[in-house]
Amino acid sequence: MEKRDIDVRWSLGLKLSTGFHKLDQMFEGGLKLGSLNFVTGVTSPARDRFLSELAINEMKRGYGVVYVTTDRPGKSIEKEIGIKIPGSTYNELLYVVDTISTMLEDRFLPPIRYLSRPNDFSNLDKVVENAFVTLKKRGIPQQVLIFDSIDKPLRLIRGYMNVYKILLAIQMLLEGYSVPGFCSMDPKMHSSMAVRSMSELASSFIAIDNNSNTMTTISGEVRKATRFAFDELSFKIL
Image (tube, rainbow, N blue to C red; front, side, top):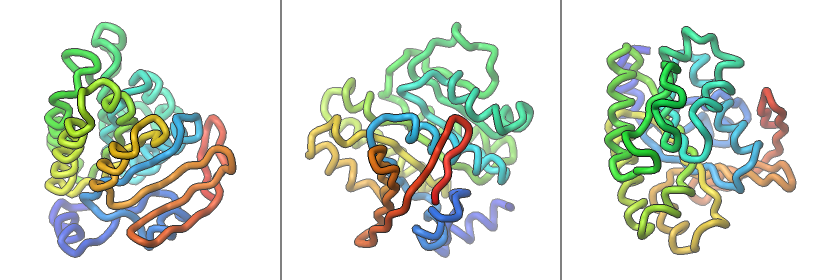
C-alpha cells in the first residue's frame, strides 16, 4: 500500500483489518487508523496468544509491528512470532521494544531493542516514535502498535496521571502516523479512577474473559460478544 493511499484512508476515517474476520465484523470493518484500543482482561495465556496472533496477522499482510513488552522478555515475543513468520520477514517488519531485559541478554536478536535502563518508562513515547520512524525508513508505511501491558507502568510510575500523559503522547503519535494501537491491561489490578482515566483515551475495548472463553467488543455504545478458542499455536474467534 502506498503512503498516499494510507493518508487518504486516514482522512476518510477508514479502517484497518485486524486479520480476524469475526473481530472485523464486530467492529464493522476493522479499527480506525490512528486509534488506541484497549485489550482488557487478566494476564493469561489467552491474552498473550491473542496479541501475538494479532501481530502475526498484520505481518503476514506486509505491515510493520511495533511490539512494546513490559511483562515478558522480548525473546519470548520473537519466538512466538517466529514460529509462523520467516526470520527474514520478521527482522524487517518486527520491532520489539523490550523494557525489562538488558542488552547483554539477547543482543544478537535483530528485531529486539532495549531501553537504556530497564523499567524506565519516562521516555517511552520517544522510543515508540523512533520505532515508527525506523520502520518507515525501511519502506513500511503502514504499522501497528501493540503495548503489552500498562500494568507495570501503572505500578512503578508514581501517580496514574503520569501514565496517562505517556499514553496520551503515544495516542498523539498514533494519530500523526496513522497507526492503530492495542494496549493491554488488567482492570482488576488498578483503582477504578485509574481505569476510568485510561478509558478516556480509548477508541474501543476488546475484553477477554478466560472463565467463559468470551470476547466482548465495546465501541461507543455498541457492545458485541462472541467466543474464542486458543492453543499454543493459534487464537481463533468463533
